[in-house]
Length: 210
Image 1: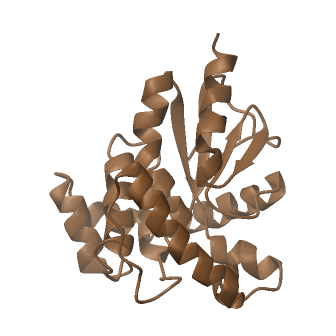
Image 2 (image 1 turned 90 degrees about the horizontal axis):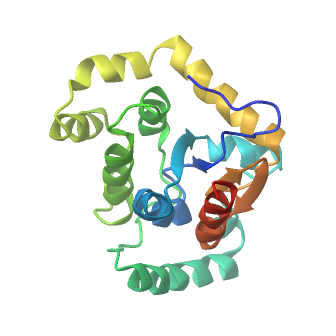
Image 3 (image 1 turned 30 degrees about the horizontal axis):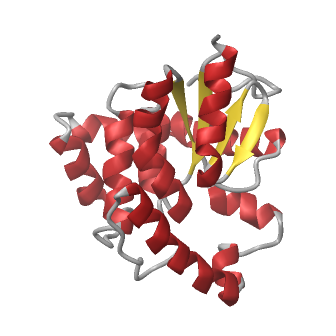
């Protein structure tokens, strides 16, 4: 697995995309980032993280959208607006935040594979459009199968000790970089937080390639 260096710097024209499938704003970015990056000639490095572990380091036992009901009520209205703006489907999840450990491990294992973007889009859709349990092994396997992949060996590798450790280390790397929420984007060592900063991050990528 290609981990970031101590500063989070990557090659010019590259955006590191730090995300969690349980994050509703990560859903927006997952669905948009490949097309927007391609439009600017930027390269996406997928960095799945355990956002819950980062929240626990702040003393939070769940999402701030749950801990602060007023903020949570605002967020669900905002998601309707944002999905309408981007032409995305949206169903408020019946469980939030939903456990996403298995698909995050699969994403960690497959982060450099050509199927990573399609896999992430499908998992995010299952959570925030189909309102399905994305921790279910059969459901994750079906996603991989539908992508023309051999699900069993991929899931076995994802559940291996080395990959579990890789995801934990990547989460710790995020904390070391100063990432405190998802989605976050790192370009040239600088953090851009939130789906509403995706375009700024990608524009910076384009600037660095001029």
